[in-house]
Image (tube, rainbow, N blue to C red; front, side, top):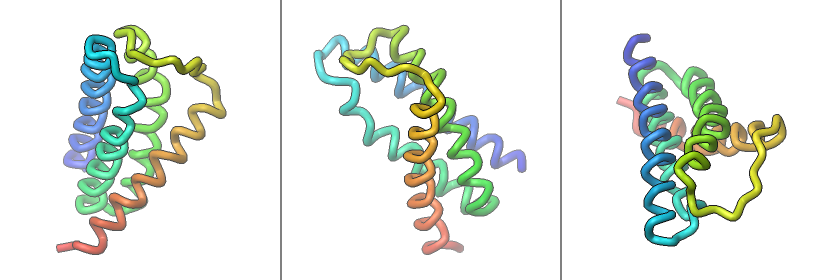
Length: 120
């Protein structure tokens, strides 16, 4: 279980890093912050893959849902604080957070499926 918590914390670290660095870089180089979404999706797949291999797909999807909530709330606040180049008028509302959780679960399922297909 400690390994799973460690992997989840790596996921939080990767999300925070992407939100902070991505915000600064998008502003400095003038590209839209939304173009970094594939990197977020890759993080969800990667973390889900690792957790599924460690503990199973149910735990993986639970943690990925948590990461989605984290990204939709704290991650978004970080990107606004660091002035990401975005025209979005995103508000942190329950429907917006839930839609983010659905997206993260979809990519979490992909990561879990890959882990299960190539299980030890």
